[in-house]
Image (cartoon, rainbow, N blue to C red; front, side):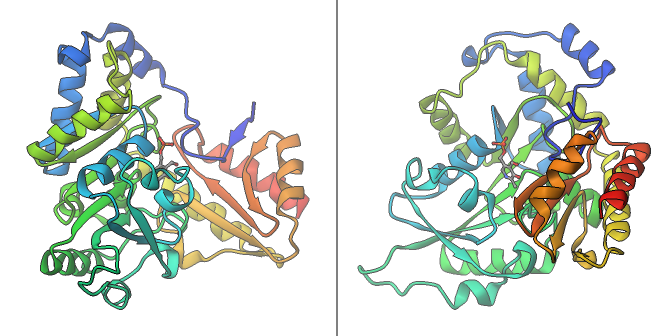
Length: 340
Ligand SMILES: Cc1ncc(COP(=O)(O)O)c(C=O)c1O
């Protein structure tokens, strides 16, 4: 559809080698715990995240929502960024599945701090929802692919431990955070009770996500997956792509980050475009249009085969990924330059 598709890192096509591995993979009925490929993927994911167990699920949304259902009691309160995916893009599911309430927090680039939470903690009183969970999205999609400072994450974890709260990490793009920061996935995960990761974003697998945590929590997550109809049968056929991506595509993320920076720096040269250059940490670039032409430009770019998403008249997002090479970045820039 687009010759250069910068709409999202979810649009990647499986590579030739990934397709070969998928075609040859061994499968079984995973609801009977008989799929060897899924078992390998879950073991490898748990190992990489430093957790006892992991569970393969169809999507990042299901991973987050199951994790919140495991951690929260109905009526609990979950602190998250006002830019969080669970707050803005998961169709209100925390109120339906975990039956908990979100408490969105302001903060630069989708990042909030220990004092931000402390100011809003509820007193122990029957009038208030129990402040029970802190959710961190790393990298923050709405925050522009920003990587959290590790000390901020540690401070929030310390607060959670002191107050008997639990923490969830939405690591849909944790692999990007690990590559950009040099802090391994397991170190980020060490500060969370549950972690959700996506194989179908920067890693380029066609389908799937995982939840990782203690054996006990994953046992409970397994029951939730069943309740939500997320038990899949010979799903090793898709898990094979995820396992391949996990083993072969993590180190390629650095190229996506370099390409995002090139887009950001070049586009920031235009008078009517503003980019938070300091906030471009990974593969996402948000453009602010001072003249409110984002939708118009999105259509003009589409007519030239360049895919982007405008979210409002003054905001547009570009995302680099496995299927956009250096040539693609230059073609996109050429189209932008002509139109701007
Ligand atoms: C930060 C974040 N979390 C969760 C998700 C949900 O993933 P899925 O689209 O697989 O449900 C996304 C999707 O873009 C995301 O960006």
